Length: 543
Image (cartoon, rainbow, N blue to C red; front, top):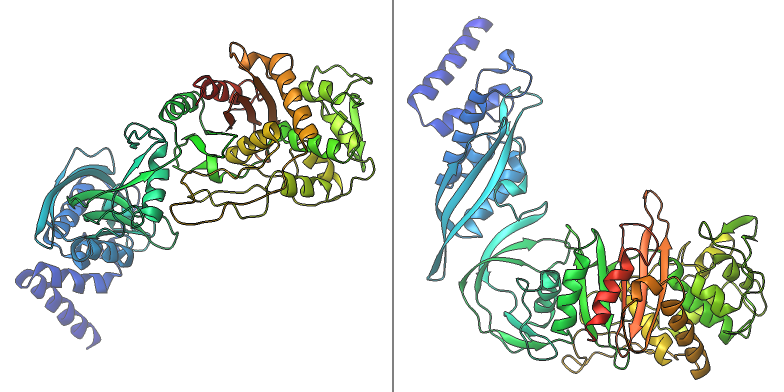
C-alpha cells in the first residue's frame, strides 16, 4: 500500500512537469531532491567537477530566467538561492533594468564569460547598459547537481558582498572638483584621486551648489562608503568644489607611486597646511596616504629628536653616542648592518646616519618618562588626538604612552607607534616651520569646520631639526635620493619591520622650499631606496 501511494505521487509530479509550466514543475522536483539545479534525482548524485554538458545546461537556464526577470527561478539554479534572489530582485525592482539580453562566451572549463546588454529606465529617462562579467559552475554539496556558484559579481563585476544596484535621483549632486589653479581634477587624468573625489562628492555635493541627476549606482550597504556611479541617465548640474591640490604636484605623485606596488605619497604646503598632492598605487583602492596606519620607522626620529631637545637632554651639536647595540629593559636594539659605531657622535651625526642605538640610550635620561614622546607628538606636532578635519576621512597618528620595550621601540618608529604618509608630511612641515598647521584638502571656510590646533615648536628646536634634516639630505642616508634637487632641501629616511611581512616598509619624508612630502611603500629596503625617489619626484615639481 505504501509503495503504491509513493508511485502515484511521483507519477503525479512527472505528469505536472510534462504538462505544466516549467518553473512550477522545477520547484516540485527541487522539493523532492533537496535543492536547486537540474539533472537526475538525488539518488543518482554525481561527483567531481561539472562536465561541459552540465555547464552549458545550467548556465543556459540561469541566463534564460535572469533575462525574463524571474529572480526566484534564476536563483534556484545557484548554490545560494536566498542571496541570489535578493540581488536579482533588486536588479529589476531597484535598479530598474529591463530588456535584458545575455550572451555567453566560450566556456573555460567551468568558468563562463558573458556580456549583458540591457536598458535602465527611471522617471521617463532611459539609457542603454552594457557590461561583461563571468560566473563559475560548481557541484552542489548535498544534491550533486551543477549549480551557479553565487557571487554578487555574477550580477555586475563592480558588486561585492553587501552591495546592491539602485537607480534613483543621486544622493548628492555631481561636483566639478578643481585644483588650486582652477584646473578640473578627474579620476581619468588622476587615477589616485578616484576614491578621494568620490569622498568629496559624498561630503560636499550639496554644499558645492549643484543639483542631483539620475544614476545607476552600486550602493555599499553598511560600510559608510559613498555610492559608486555606473551609469548616468540624466546629468545633474555640478557644483564647483575648489581643493588645495596642485595639478603639477599631483601629476608627479601619480607617476612616482607607479614605480612601486603598495605605495602612497602626500605633499603639503608647510606655510599653510594645504594638501598639494595625494596618490596611492594599490589594487584595493584604499587611501593609505590619508588613512594608512603603519610603523614609520626612523622618520619618527624627527619627533624623538624634538623631544630630546625640548627636554634639555641634548642638542643638535650635543652628545648622542652611537654604539653597536643598546639594551633597554632586557631587550637589545641594533643598528642597520654595516653601520660603524661612533661613541663621540653628536645628535646631528646620529640623526643623519639614522643610528638607532643613539636614540635608545638617550630616552632613559631625566626628565623623560613613558609619556614624554606622546606629549611631544600631541602637544607640539598635533598628532594622536583624533581631531584632524582634512575634508575627508584621515588618520591622525598614534603615539601611545607605553613602558617596557615598546617605549624604546617607539623612539625609533616601531612598537605601537602608527603613522600615515599624511602624518609624516605634517611632521616635516611642523619641524621646519615650528608651527603646526593641520593639513587640509578643502578649505574650512566651505563648511565652517575648525582645524586642529597644537603648540608647535620653539624656534630654536625647529631651527635645529631643519638643519639636521638638511645634513641628512646632503650628507646622510637621504643624500642619494635627494641628489640633483636644488634649493633648500632636507629629509629623513626610515624602514620599519612589520609582523608577518617578509620585507620591511620603506619610509621617506623631506622638504624643498615650501613643500613637504612623505611616502611609504611596502616594497622593502631602506627608506632612500624606494620611498625616497617617490618623495624626490614630488619635491622636484616645487608644488
